Image (cartoon, one colour):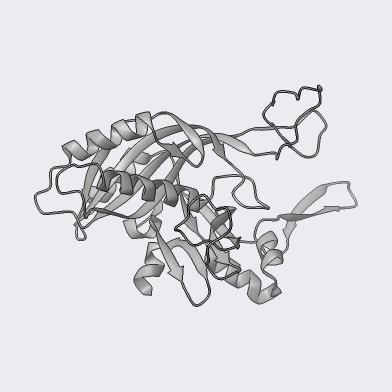
Length: 303
């Protein structure tokens, strides 16, 4: 039996939509995993009874609504980021700043709880998490406007009742999953990761006109899979060995230079999953390749 902590319908304002150095859209998976890890640390140090060993071992993100702060004028081909208006300097000039892509969105958090003591009562824990989310917590760099009360759902391995209850609670919505299989297919054809990423996202069409003037459009290229395919940032690869950096704010934690790991993902409705594990994510560290990743739980089970 699994215990699922559901935090439904969280409305977030000004979340970070710059998910990697070259993609803008839904916040990075690392942002959600980091927020849940921070919540776990707060819970474990809360002083509540029997919560010291509880682990938030896996999560899923259900997207209900997203509004990217962008503007596209009449006749414009591209969209522009709507930036913040910062106060002028003393001499009247505009201050230098880095443009940040922001978005407003509504999501539900599905959190798998493990190491739960037997006969554990969740009422006090749920009340504490509701208060924490309402008062202090931020998600993906954004401010939480409001959320519905948390729920605990019991999911049994041999029963579908718990999973069906969970699906009903988060519909309509879309779960974000990884589509590493598509990247592997495109890289086998192309060999270059960036080109493979673009090929998985770009649609090409041919226009033909017959002798009667009838125009027909046809899709060409290698992208033929169904689904809502998007680029997603799933972690980092270290470029240097972890070490202490000069003037770092945390004097005890090792740091290293790293680059974002971007792959293909898919937004998929929860009722299309046969198992809860298919929509859950876990953290993964590969010391040999210096990879700090968020990966599907089914991959970690296979490992």
